[in-house]
Image (tube, rainbow, N blue to C red):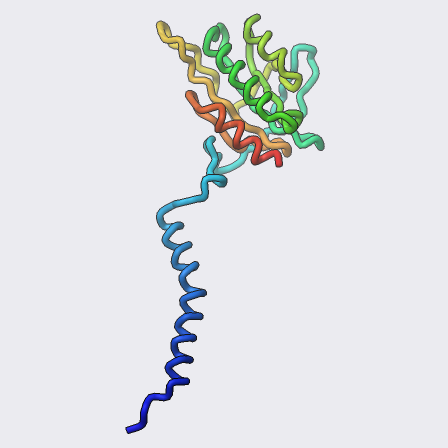
Amino acid sequence: MNAPDPRRSRGRRQLIFVVLVFALPIVAASVLALADWRPRASKNHGVLLDTPQDFRAQVALDTSGAPLVWNSADGIWHMVVRAPDNCGAPCLRMSDSLARVWTGLAGDAMHARVVWAGAADADTAAVLARIPQARIVALETTLLPPPVAPLAGDELAPLTVWLVDPNGYLVMRYDAGFDPTGLRADLRRLIR
């Protein structure tokens, strides 16, 4: 009987090591994908729409009658709120939240616009006036659900924020009760 060749067993160990070096990351990635894990930076805070919808043909006229351009070369993201009439306190809170989001974007703020679709009472209009990129518009569209008025006895209105990308496509929504810091984080990532 021949004695085992030490070079052969060493070569076998090296081959196994090389296979493991290449196979372990693939196995780890597969396990993480099956567990639906994603790095924190790649998670959206809003709900990404399954199919982006073309918003370019939606006519939005501001208070002076000028149309809003959804797709421009300036790379502007639009935060659209469709507000009900006589909204009151919920609309005031939403406009204040959007003003804080816009201000929190700092140097990137000029690439974000607040579009207030619907009536704005004096207090809400005053808050929106603090945002140079805000527009109060009349918007007739079937792509967004109609606004829901506040419930009687309940101060909360289910206000949703919709995100339209610089190419004019409706891509994301933030449902009622969303965290404005999540919207700001998403916008910061998208604008860059």
